[in-house]
Image 1: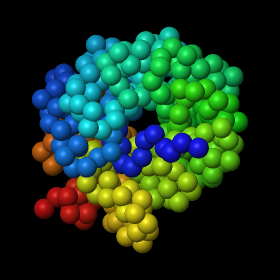
Image 2: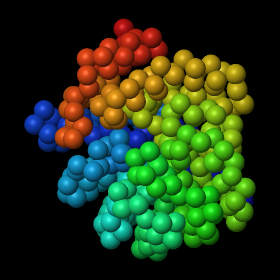
Image 3: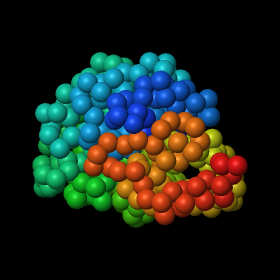
Length: 297
C-alpha cells in the first residue's frame, strides 16, 4: 500500500478580518508565511476555522489562491471546498483545482441531513468532477450527519478519495476505517487537537489543527517526535499543550483562537456574525492557557 499523502500537523487556517468585517489580507499573508517558517506540514484555508460559511464566493476564491501562491509548493494546500449544496461544492472544488491546490477538503453536508446514500453520491460527485485528491471531512458535531465506516470504505474505492479528516473524537474510528479500507492506505487525519497523539497511536497519519494557528512549532514537534519513535516525548509535549487545545474550544471556534492570535500580534480578533467576540471568562481562559504553555510572556 502507498504511504499517507498528508502527514504531521496541518493548520486549519483562521481568516483574519478587520473590525468592519472585511478581510485583512496583509495579516493573512503574514500568517501563512509564519506558519511555513515555523515548520507546519500543510495548510487548510477556508475550512470551518476559516469561517467559510460567511465568506462570499469571491472571498473564498481569494483566500485559496493567496494560500497557494504564498506556499509556493513548500507545503501542501488542502483547500476547503465543502458545502451543503453538492453543486456549490463541485464549483468550489473546481476552482481549487484550477488555482493549484494539492487537494480539497469536503465537509459532510450540514443542515440537509442526507442519508448514507446521499452522502455517498455527494462526495462521489465532487470526486468525479476534479482530478486532484479529495479528503472527506467528517464532523457530526457541526453537520449532524456522520459518514459511516461502511460508506467511507465504499467511497475509498474511488481513486481520487484519499482520506478523511476525522473530527468525531471517537478513537475506534481510525481502527475501524483502517480495517474496512483494504484497497489502499487511506489517509486519516485527526480533526481534534486533543486526540492528536491518541489518533496516531490508533494508526492515524496526523492532525488538521486549530491550535497550530498559534502554536505551529509545538504542534509540529508533537508529530515529529512521534514519527521519530520518541513516544514519551510526544506524549509529554501533548500534555503540555492540552490547556491550549481545551482553551481553543472554550467557546465556539474560531472565537477563542482568533482572540489568542490577537494576543500574539498575529491579527485582530474580529469574526463575522453569527460568531461574536468571546466572553470575559473565555478571554481569561485563553490568556491563562497561552501563559501556562509559554506562548505569552
